[in-house]
Amino acid sequence: MKIVILAVRRMLGCSLLITSLAPMILVAQENSPELEPEIGRHEISILMAHTNVNGGLEQVGRSRWLVLPSWGLNYNYWMNERWALGLHTDLINENYLVEEFNGKEVLERDRPIAPALMATYRPHEHWSFLLGGGMEFAGGDDLALVRAGVEYTVHLSGSWETCASFAYDLRLAAYDSWTLGIGLARRF
Image (cartoon, rainbow, N blue to C red):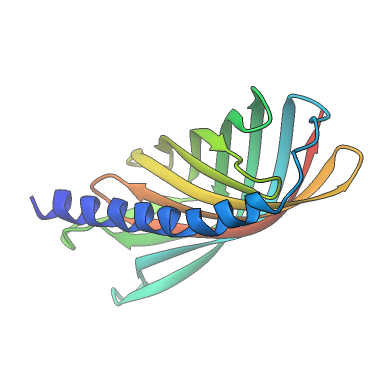
């Protein structure tokens, strides 16, 4: 029961974060020109990031905050100027130990890969909000996850963009993490 309560609290925290950013986006939208037509419907991006895990364990068993190097590889199909569906994959480039929510079980994660099917909403030419679900695969247990995120993109030239990304992964009945990254995207 405690696990369910913790999961609900964390999802509410993510929802509050996203809804607190909405007024800022609406004000910015009033002063911005109409969005330009997009170059292509397909988009691929690569991100260099750090994944932050609370509840990681040192080899001696002490709990500590982990900051792990990671990569993001994302594909989006833009249905129109505002909506996209895609596959966003995070690859953590390190092995680590982490406690589950209940604090009784220790999970060993060997370079986990976490693909998620994501829906993206872009209300403004720079801001995008993401929500979706997927799985984290690693030696041992595979974990279901819910991912929420926000991205800020800047058009470079032609079909190239640069982006900054924040994502929060809620692994059901396990542990949570958040990722902050920067990357390069190309539309075709």
